Length: 291
Image (cartoon, rainbow, N blue to C red; front, side, top):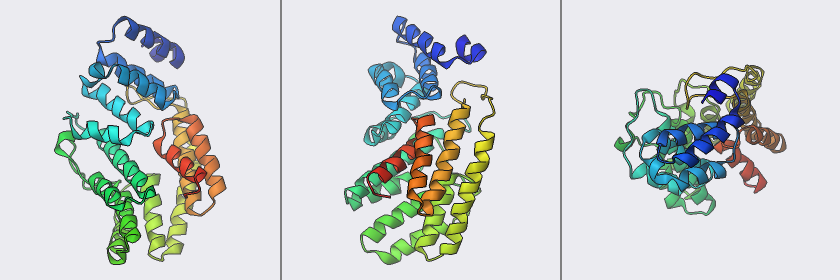
């Protein structure tokens, strides 16, 4: 704890936590704090998950450490395992702690995209529809302003379109494009722009993609500030902020069809933050020729 808090030495902090766990693996707080350090130290998701899975019973005994394991499942591409844990356990979430629902949304959308690639449209639709829900066991209420709504509506529309249900697809594309959300989140704006393009509103879409790129480049200049947030579980390194900026630029470029340039931005994002699930996803899609 002192190596991290006083020295900002993440690697020595990790080494000390690993020794602590070797002495006593029954304390879930140690796994919560170690996995936070793993993420801050840009450790591979597979290594993160291996530690948490090995001590699953201890990790599961407290919601905060259990959530870290579920996040690692998603980062490692094991979406069905993450969904199973999210569906079959009750989570007590502190006020303002809606992060678990974002993890739930990511898991279902990524699982749905995997089914779409396999042309399993009914299964994909189920996952996308699930992503729009706010299950009681997650203890997170539906907000009046849901930044995930445009992405979910867009993905549902793509299933309808693949099934030849053009009228239903158009309704969902319109919902995604027109949904008013108070968010500059790159993912939100990107999917709104994709929906605009589907509706023939190409000029509007192009403006949004340009806006995403501009915002990402502005964030790059801010990313170098060497500050950390105050509490374990809420830290973000300059490298992680820079990764988010590169990811945003990559989305904008991808929307504009500049695939090679987008790939380079996603590569930068993944190099800086190996646990950035969406940068990893888009980079893999480009590598497979699917974008």
